[in-house]
Length: 462
Image (cartoon, rainbow, N blue to C red; front, top):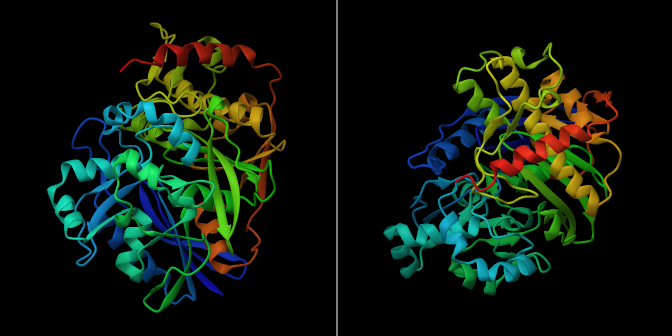
C-alpha cells in the first residue's frame, strides 16, 4: 500500500510516502509566519492549503492519505464559499490572555470537563476572539454560514468536502468533554462559542472523505501522531518531540489521568473503532523556536556550532537560560513569564550563551518529565526526536538532566510516519536504527536547583 502522510506543522508542510516498509519525505515547503502585533502569531490559510496540495502532487499516486495538524491553531471560514474570515491564529498566539483571565472563576469547570487549564494556548478563546473582532464572522453566524475549526477541519472541508475534526484535535480546544468525546454545551457557553459552527468529531482513523478520489483515512494532532510513530503503545511509554516547542506525551491507556497539581494535560492519544486511548501531555512552548531566535540574533550561523562545547555545562557555572519567549507551560502555566539569561559576567562568551540556551530547553523538559513521572510512572527509556536531537551535546545533556537513557531513532520523521501508519490501518515497522544515549553524570541536583531559581526569576516578568 502506498500512503501519503501530510505533516502540516508550525513552520513547514511535509509529505511522507510510505510504501511497504520504506518511508521517506518526498517534498517539504516552508510557509510565512506573521506577527502583526506583539504576542500575535498568524499563518495564511490559503498558503497552508496550497502547500498541502503541492505536497500531495509531489507524492504522486497513492491509495490513502493521512493528515497531521498543528493542534490548537484555528480559524473561521464561510460554509458556502470556503473563504477564510480570519488568518490561522497559531497555538503560540497570546492575544487572548487578558480575556482568558476574565474567565478565571470558570477555571474549575473547564478543568473538570475539558481536562485543560484556562490558557490562551487552546482554541476556545481564539474562536471567541474571532467572533468579537471580525464582523464578517459575526454576519456569517447570523446567516448560518459560519464555520469555526482547527486547521484540520478547514483542510478537510476545502479539500475533501467533509466538515469534521478528530477527537485528538478536538481535545485541544477546551470545548470537548474529555469523558464523552463530544462538544460540551457548558464549555461552549463559558467561552461564548456557538456549538452549531463547530465540526463533527470523528475517530482518529476512519472516514474523512476523499481528496482527488483518494480516501483520507487518518487525521490527528501532530504530537499524537509522533507518539504513535515512536511506537508508544503501553501505559508508561513516553516520547519527547523537539520541534517549535518541546512536547512530552505518555500513554495512560483507558484511564484519563487528571493531574492539575502537576500542570499536566490529559488528552486523547487516538481513537479507533470507538475505543479511546488516553495520554498525558506536558509542553515547553519554545524549543526549536528559541534556537531559531538565537540564530536571528546572530548567536550562531551553522547548526554545527551547537554540536559540542569545550567548557563544562553552563548551568554548572551558574549561567542559565529560561526559554520562555512565549511564557511557561507545564508545570507552571505562566504566560507572564519572560525569557532570560542569568549569571552572565564580563567573561561570558557567545558560546556560553548558546550552551545555556540548549541546556535551558533540556532542563525545562526535565521539569515536565519529573511532573509526569510523579503521576504516571514512565518506562525507563524515553524516545526522542526533532531537530535539536541532532546535536550530540544536547542529547548528552538531556540524558543527564533526565537521569535516564534517551533513545533517538535515526529515522526522525516520526510525526509523518505515525500519521502514515494510522492511515494504513496496520502496524508498520519503523525504518532505521535507534541511537541510545545514557547519562554520564550521576548527580545533577545542583543543576536543577540553579535552574529552578532562574525560572522563579522569569515568572511574572510581563
